[in-house]
Image 1 (cartoon, one colour):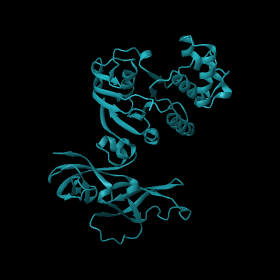
Image 2 (cartoon, helix red, strand yellow):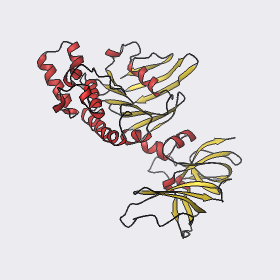
Image 3 (cartoon, helix red, strand yellow):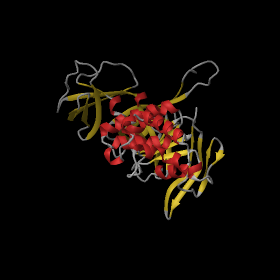
Image 4 (spheres, one colour):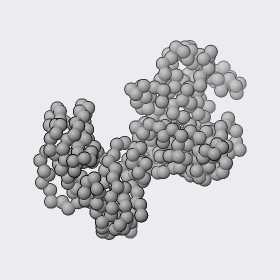
Length: 383
């Protein structure tokens, strides 16, 4: 791997009375595509600027490969930044924009020409070398900015919402290209975005941030399937959230996955949710009767049928409702189902086969909703 391990330890930063970062610690692995994800004002760009050297923290440490870089100026940190607004020189050609840092270092003409052409080829802009930035599309400008950042051969590439100015289709195309560039050069990418789909699509791992705190770190699958907090559940994808009182919690000791490992402990809990009734959910965190738990279940985990499911499994939650609104989107239909006459539950049914030519469940139909106890999560407990 050509990249660097980046470690952020106990970093805090305030601007006057506003606390942008609150004791943030992260370990980003060499060669990883790591995303900082969160809403505007959550502190992700401030953290990126501290890693780049454009801001200095009030407290904490930042290391590249175990070497402290806080007192190293930005141009000597082996980290380059790609900005949201491209920051290209409008009077220079594409070639000269990419060559700029090499000109500053007084590299030979032959070396400049060779390396610039190499990186223009990497971002697929060989035929645009003599154009000015105002002759390029948004996606092409962003590729120039990426090539200019990479030509210095940094060990860490920092990307500050680089695709937010692009339209949805172009952004998806550029995401794929960005991921391919990362695979080719193998350095550490740290990507700041507020777009959950961007982060889930390209990240090896990501950190979800809010109000200066890191709420959860993990792979896209871990973050989506096992949200650690109510905020993470709401922010990543769509979900149904309810507060419920814990009626009982039975400890389940699972067999070890392989010899020598300790058995995992889970709890089968039963919650009383005013909007639904009683539901069953498994959790790895110990909970006690009388506590209030925040429960979530993703819309695509819920099975919707017109006929009552024929199942004798004790871990299946089953409710009846009326379709309040079906929304057909080609590849899926989203249903808003009214349960207990007033509470809406979101359900998503995927259309995976040709025979799923359209929804057979329609407005005002009586339906059954079901999901396994393993498909719901408790994302918070209140005393």
